[in-house]
Length: 133
Image (cartoon, rainbow, N blue to C red; front, side, top):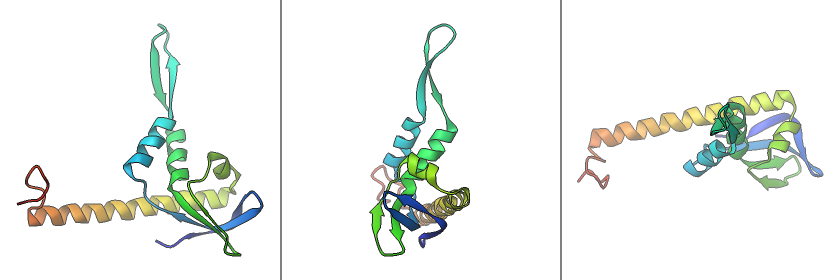
């Protein structure tokens, strides 16, 4: 997919970035985002309990999905970006980023679903080694 143009831009350091490239997460990024959203709290009986914040997990996923930033004058920065960078975005650009990341995820999942269906049609994956032979 194409880079997402930002209406208001995102200033990081001295550079204002006007476009973001967003990619689906790999397993490692998804795991890291899930771990970042967990905190240990103590229940009423003193037992430790892991509590997950859906907001933190979503934010961590989103920041990791930003793989590249571009300025109008051609400067680039590789992602991921920090939560602090996300917090500095305008609400309009943030909402656009969330929507765009959802589109990227949906396209990726649809493509993976098509690939799974094709493998099933050809018999690939029937054996434990995934070869279908």
